[in-house]
Length: 424
Ligand SMILES: Nc1nc2c(c(=O)[nH]1)N[C@H]1C(S)=C(S)[C@@H](COP(=O)(O)OP(=O)(O)OC[C@H]3O[C@@H](n4cnc5c(N)ncnc54)[C@H](O)[C@@H]3O)O[C@H]1N2
Ligand code: MOO
Image (cartoon, rainbow, N blue to C red; front, top):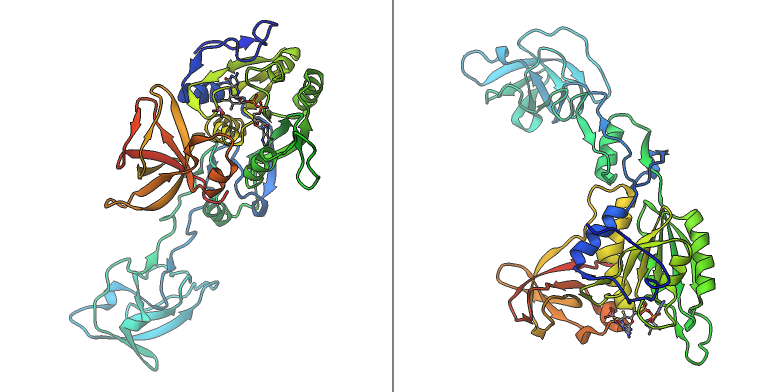
């Protein structure tokens, strides 16, 4: 991979230099420069949902810890089933979950047993009570049981020493259940990623305040915050709106570089003389690895570093901010968080629209699912005809479809990939 570009007076002319690279390469470069957080913390299991495991975790006990019954019924020994049935066997005891039975039993004795109760040594099977006929102190059994029937043997689920969860995996509710099953009360996870957010733009006003002439409301701030607020491994440091002035931006970048692992900005990355993001980055000795990407929307997205902080300068148009965040910035942020899997989660779909696009460029378009084809794949309709400023098209979208660079004409029925937005 090419090395990063240091930001001199010349290269600081935003958009002036840098080869256009593909989305895949841009995302790979962003992931490659991401520095995974090293510090760890111990958190109670109850507060660990979605956190990222710092080390592989191995089982310390067998699960289940002892042979136990999978059914309410009768524990039996196979040697009590001589000849042909039905067999009448006397009930020699009773054991419920949480109890322990150390007694000795004759081979023609059965044990009344309940789900989860330990199966004492010597018993070979548990017969469901529905398959037994109880008469006072005996049961009548008509079918010979199979060895091991309805017994969950010690260690058949997990063996002490087995790897339970690997480093870089997220603690889902199911994985937490597994760790709880091992008796763990807390777990060592990577610390949260500190993500700084800045909305650049002199024209921006925060919602709730009347608009002045030439102003628009800040949509990107809430959109990016809302996407991250659902992420359990992220901590957001919101620096609010910073006007299009180099000094103001440089000051905000300096503050963020002292506190954040990654800074996400929106706006100010294209070619005009009001776009000061890149030169403010240069003022801090920043470098850029991604300057222009063959994508629409989002071509002017910038990815680089200020010191040890990753810098993701997203374009200001809301759709460009959304797409570049999800396709390029988020994989790098996931890498910083320590996640083993970084890429977007694609779903298979099929085009229900026609569209002419430029060859060599990847386009990302808001889509709505209108039905299913004969293979069950979602059929997509394109919304908004591609304006990167359209808030409405994204608000109506079920997802973002990727129109690949090697395709010029999208025809109905063409297989596509799309990233569902699924409400978060
Ligand atoms: N001469 C050129 N002009 C532009 C180019 C180019 O290559 N040459 N690229 C265009 C493309 S593509 C995009 S995308 C935009 C990116 O512009 P910037 O990142 O510099 O963003 P701004 O100019 O600051 O804003 C663009 C647009 O978005 C609105 N905006 C900005 N921030 C927000 C926000 N937080 N919430 C809502 N809307 C926002 C802003 O008012 C502008 O209308 O540049 C093109 N120009
Ligand atoms: O990258 Mo821009 O988003 O096409 O307006």
